[in-house]
Image (cartoon, each protein chain N blue to C red):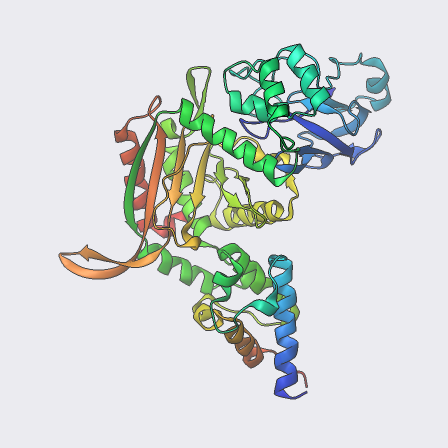
Length: 88
Length: 390
C-alpha cells in the first residue's frame, strides 16, 4: 500500500469515527485545514471519545501533549499515518 | 414486598408515559437492573430497580400516562414467594389515565419518597377538555406555575394554533426547560458572585496525571472541577440542598447535576453522585458514562434523580463567564467558563497563567454573599492543591 492509499484509508476511518460521535456532521464539507473541533462542535468529551474510537480502529493513542498536532482533519490524518503500527 | 414506583426526574415533572417492561414476573433482579422504559419530556428513560428481589406483578401497561410516585410493579424480597406476593396483594391505588383529579406528586428526594410541593391545580373540566382537544397539560401546568389552569386556558391554547408540543419532541424539551427556568426566575431571589481562579497548577498536575495513564483512563478538566466543587460543597451546606414548601432542607450528600447540551438541541442534566467522596478516576468514569448515555438518549432514572446542586461548564464553547439560572428546587448553581491563558499578577509581577472564571448563583432565601464568597475561596484553594483531589 502506498502513502496515498493509507492516507485515504485513514481519512475514511476518521470520517466513520466522527459519524459515531457527531452523526449530523458531514465530513465531506469540513475544511481539512481548520479546527475540527470548532467545525464539528466537539467538546472535550466528544474529542476524547473520537480519539478512543480512532485508537480502537487504527491502533494509535494520541497523548494530550500532541493535541495541538491533531486539531485539523489534515493534522489528524497525518499524525495517525506517522504513528500507525507498521504491518509487516 | 417491594413497590417499584415511578421516580421523579426533576422539578418540572409530574408524570410520564409508560412505554414497555424489560422484565417479567418470576424474574430475579438486582439493584440497578433496568425494569422498564418510560417516556418524558427528557426523552425515553430507563427505570432501574433499587433493591434486589423477584418480579411478582406488573401494574402498568404501555401507553398509560402515570403520575410520579405511582406503583409500577410489586416485587418479592428476601425469602418471599413471588407468586404469593403476586396473588395476595390487593391492587394498590387506582391507575390514573389523564382526565381525573390527581393530587400532583412532587419532586422526589430518593425514588421512593414523595413530598407535596406547590403546583398548578387543574380542574376535572379542564383536564377533560385538554384530552378532547389534544392540549398538553404538562406544558400548561408548568407555564401556570402556582396559578390554577382553567378551562379557558385550555381552550385558548387549543385555539392559538399549531399543536402544543408533543411529549418527547425537541419542542417539548424546550418547553420543559423554559418552564423550569421561568419558575426559577419567578420564585428564587438569585444573587451572583464570581471570581477568576488560577488553574495553572491544577492543569499541570492533571497533564502529568494523564501522561502517566492510557487513553481509557484520561481524566478531563471537568471531572477535576467536579471533584473540587463536591468537596467545597460539603463544607457549604447552605448551597447544597432543596427549598421546598418555604423551607430549606440541606442534603448530607453531594450529587452534582452536570448540564449537558444535546447535539440536536436541548439540554439534559445527568447526575454525578457522591462527587465529594469518590476518587477522581471514579468521578471521571461516572461523568463519562452519564454523558454517553445522555448523548445516546438512553438515560436512566438514577441519572436524573436527586441532584443536590448543578454545575454548568461552557468553557469549550468560548464563553468566559456564565451567569446561570438555578434549577429548582436546588439553591445554587456553579458556572465555569473557558480556561485560557490570561495576564495576572503574582508576587507583584505581571505573568501569564491559565485561569477560569467561576461563578456562583445562589438562593438568597437560604444563603448570603458571605457563604457564597467563602465557597468560592475554598474552591480556589482546593484547585491550587490538585493532588488532594485525586
